[in-house]
Length: 108
Image (tube, rainbow, N blue to C red; front, side, top):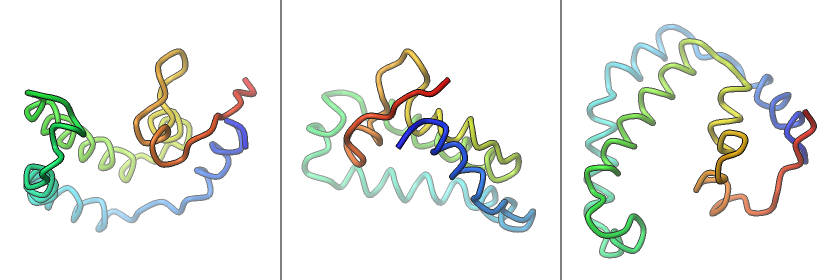
């Protein structure tokens, strides 16, 4: 699997319709509250995010919801791929390291 393959795969994701993007945006506060409540209820939260990082976690959840809404409104396969993988030159994202493992060859 390489970087270009992932971008090409992301380009095949059907675009959300306007109604779905609006509904997502209309419910953003509920989504953020639900994930924050779930995470704060975990007994291993400090193990996951470190000591004294709850506000940063909450900011990250709010940023995630805004990012997903922007992708729903303005699909961009390259931005989506780079965000999930971690931008070039930066450490790979937690999602990639924890859930996917392995490496992605850059074919730029």
